[in-house]
Figure (tube, rainbow, N blue to C red):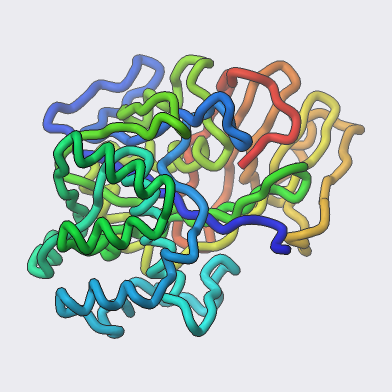
Length: 365
């Protein structure tokens, strides 16, 4: 049995015609919002936290019959080549079987399907001519009564997403989703682990949304700065916090989209946090950090014991920092310094004294 489940998530940014001034604690302005959903309080994984839409890969997402839909719009096997980045080494999540669609295709279908199921946004197109949109994604409007019905059907059976696309004569807009990152739940975590591919897409106008009530409790559109400096009642898992802090460096959605298009051609590298125990809390070091182990095992539990020093002292002995710090006093810090990502990514904004709703052991990804 596999030690984790493969999944895909979508970071969706929607352009705003009015520029919003960020809170006084920062100086940036944004012309776009991000979509996040609050997981149900009874969820077995990450309850009551805000996440990007997404979920576990279903076998139907990789079914070769998707070629039937794409061929009806004039796509052939060569049409999907641009989805595969020019990268010699690919993370494990992108490995696929001969009788499946390439993961660069099926993971995008997963992200689009889950986004529809959880938020009601159908990122599909009904004409190949719409491919000339310079990187922006589009959505198909569905009446509220039909939308609820289809969300329920897809929630109950992922295969119904294919039926939905056939009935609406549309195809999932794979080419407007750009590889953004890849996170694997730490080996120190006891419970479910997930290997997640994150994609980013930008949409020109904010679409109608209806969140799926059995898995979600709330849906929020807000600018990156507000999510980063929100109240303690808005808690994010570490990967979402890290990625929003990256995105927060872009005031303009146009610049964000340009960056995503260019960086996506390089592919992504796996982020597997390694936990370090310290006197006053713990730190998750990430690849590139001076203290990241030379060798890691994706399966065996790996915890570094440095309880002889504090988080601050551990910081002082680390020339290069790419880490998330969790203090025992319900404070979390994102600390990145002197770090250049090997996959062309920006370092996130450095966050200090970010309160979290509950101090949890074994932080979940």
